[in-house]
Length: 405
Ligand SMILES: [Zn+2]
Ligand SMILES: [Zn+2]
Image 1 (cartoon, rainbow, N blue to C red):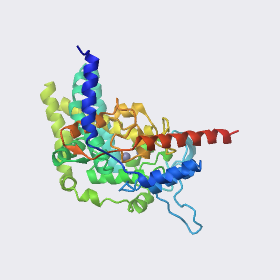
Image 2 (cartoon, rainbow, N blue to C red):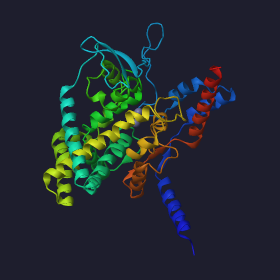
Image 3 (tube, rainbow, N blue to C red):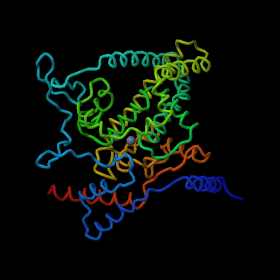
Image 4 (cartoon, helix red, strand yellow):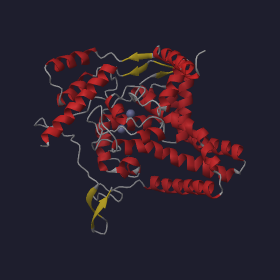
């Protein structure tokens, strides 16, 4: 008689083989040919990265090809700027102060605050903290935990929807799933789908430059939420205009989302969670609003923002020299989005990770959708490509180490 473990293994291999039917590995023939030549010549160095970028022919959106703007001397104009966490700043009082971790970063030349966002975030955080405090003081943590019944839907709307489906086209989804994800994205309340995907594609194309909306070179706080409190750097608009977005507007689900966003935002980010909470907790509408809407909204925003801050600053870089990092803590908080070095290296891969599937709730969800026929054309980076990228990284690190002597 098969043991429980054997049974589970058999079921999981059956499940995996069904999923495999939906996966279409990227055809990387042009890339492979180039890489083969490189290997024969034993030149696995920095040029690998540019070859990889030039030849990732199947990256339809061009997000894996760094944009290079050359001046008359053929030098790149879009060099990452160095902002370190110990920046000298001039406060309005003209005092010069060194600020650690950029928590008080103020640049007088580009100082411009989006006051309505500051106000909205102050209100949201005040209400959210009151919600958390009430759960704590009245021993009602079950209420906060159950608010995540709705929060999970919202999280998947961001990770499986706005991110992996619409921003990167790493898989395709049938209409019912697209509607489900669009509503989830509205529950998370992170602006309409078009704006979210536009900002994210610009982030990938111009990572860690002034054209990156949440450039982590400007410090943890800026990458986390400060970018929403300040006007965008002009490069975000001028360079960002080169990123293709027409495919987003071609989707009627996104057009509907843009058109009715504020009505849907009120309905799904506030009314629905409050109503479900009031029904579940039997504690009154005010309590439910503070917990299921405000506290849930506040914590889910921070979970997403950690991908832009922590997963760009803390963790390993096994796949490429891109600043994005492998951060399992962020993956746990953001349904698998913390495997960020892998993701920035192979942005078309629907799983956004090579191995870390235990914390990759979003991958499991997409696999399940593929199993019931709502998701298809799941794209993955080939094992061969991943291994070669990792070998290249080892070589680069070794050269850096030797150069330091
Ligand atoms: Zn991405
Ligand atoms: Zn990123």
